[in-house]
Length: 421
Image (cartoon, rainbow, N blue to C red; front, side, top):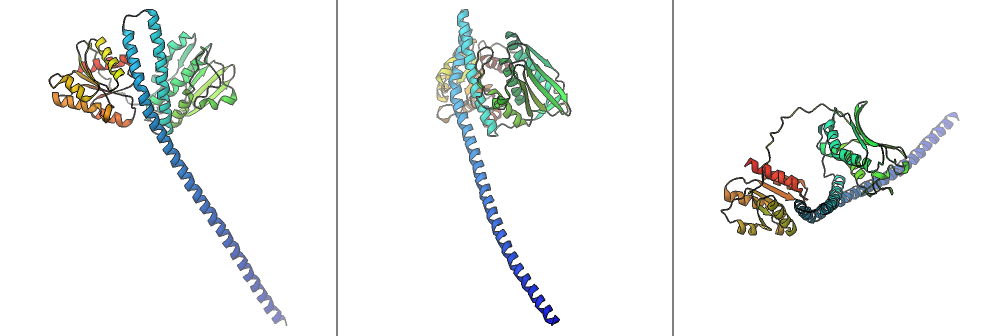
């Protein structure tokens, strides 16, 4: 009997094990199906996220291309206006007229800054601005800030103090200057009394550049919002000027592009401190100083000028004549060829890059050089800030000047080119 009972127990245990195995198999199959469905769902989500990311990147690139094209078209008339204004300033006019010229010039500069800042923000968002990180001496940047903003602070009765700066940091010089220029400009704009301090200090294993002001301070609820585009928090500058609300937006984007941490501490009624945290690095080896060629007069210089915008062409021609130069001006290549012929050789060429009908000013420069058998100095002007245009101009051994043109800089460049010849 005991043997029979043991046999029955064994059969029962086997049956139980069999049932358990079947149950486990069902559970495993069910879990496997759930995991498979979850994996497929995650895969679809990843595909959707990838598609959304690509769509956002395409939209960003499209926005950047649109802004670049719009900026080019907006800067053209702005360029003509500034050139005409410069020619007017060179005339004998009374103090009241000069004051009006100054006001108009400041307004045009504000428009130019706004257009360029919007384009820079778009490029940073699209990842088109690639920082060139190398050793930068902080003192060079701080000295530039003091020279640029010292007179502005003095006119407002403020003290601008600059301290430290003997350290070397790894950064992009142009972007670093732009960050600090915006911070100092904002500090002066919103400070009514006291002053602004710019100080470079070593803190632990980093170099920290502080921009400290004694202004009204920023409420805690606005300290994150002020970095958004066009956010001003209802504030006006102490002289009543309404800011555009773009400076801090480009500060944050530039700092992120460089990998620099940006921090803010502020107390209402006491002021604010913006801090840029940088990584120290070894000094850059000294470079030989470039030989400086003294500028010469433009009197009697023969300038071939090609510019498709009529207003800009007329303004440049007036400017050149005011500098006692002989300007031969045309709006397209064929008109310039008819004007010059093949015997009259210019001393220098000033050509717009984008001409009507898809033509390029570099082609005119190349033609003039081939006809006369030597590298005639040339300046290419354009409102296009793309790297492709810059590369083409450099490859053609020409100087590149972006619009709107600054007459004093253009005159100095032309004098320098003529002195080399």
